[in-house]
Amino acid sequence: MMKKRLIGSLEVSEIGMGCMGFSHGYGQVPDEAYSIDAIRTARDFGCTFFDTAETYGREMFFPGHNEQLVGKALEPFRGEIVLATKFHLSPEEYRGGDSLYDVIFSHLQASMKNLRTDWIDLYYLHRVNELIPVEEIAQVMGRLIREGKIRGWGMSQVTADVLDRAHQVTPVSAVQNLYSMMERDCEKEIFPYCLSHGIGVVPFSPIASGFLSGKVTAQTSFQGDDVRKFVPQLSKENIAANQPILDVLSRFSAMKNATNAQISLAWMLHKYPNVVPIPGSKNRERILENLGACRVELTDEEFNELETALNACTVYGHRGINESEQNTFSKNWRK
Image 1: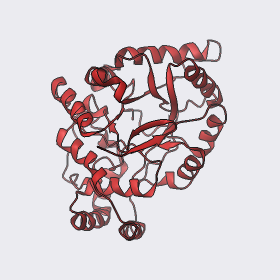
Image 2: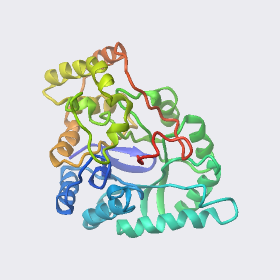
Image 3: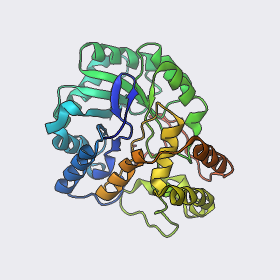
Image 4: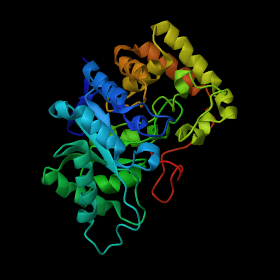
């Protein structure tokens, strides 16, 4: 079985599963039967933490599709797993007149219906809306926790100062930010703040949109709604320029009899006790490979050697974590 970690007061497997790819974001999606089997295979492996969002929909025209798929797959095991989902607040929804609680609760009700559950374990604000103070969001989250509708709440793609403003009102359980060997902004302020306040960090794209696996090359073509066509590090020029990072990974994966992806996950698990990555894949074999990183243990000496080698590499293409509804990575997709 996989080891457990705490994010806030929630106990989860040390590696979770991002489920977006079963609905959109990585080209053609698998059929429902395959997707459900893949999610349940992850659960059988020992994964207890599953991540989705209300906006993850088939070709973006079917919001809620991913939640419905995850709900169907995990309904028989609801009491054994931790479900995380996210909501967006658009400027049109709330202008300060209507009850913010009612607006957010309408999103929550829809997600609970999709997920076939009476409660959500971890409810994220998907992106901060600059027109709505995060303190007001935090107040609503506190009420939902007291009412037993959610067990904890989180924020995505936030800076430490915004996180602190929210946490002072209602303690935050988790931050879901971009973090990997190639996107390390979180190390400056987010990890120190979260470690000192008992907050979990849940990195999305911990394998850098697949680049760190070594399976994405300059010849890879991203089709349909594949979000990787927007990722700066995956331009043909930056794929070539970032090759030294793959060379480092390949050396360690050979030494540890592991894959590049597993080394990249083992690195962050060793580095931070409060990190719970959620690699996303729509391929059952890749899902099991990623979860199998829990079996790869780096010694302190190996970790230090790996860290030194990474620090000597220059990363080309940067996205960062400072995003909001008004200033997001791309209006063409949601992550």
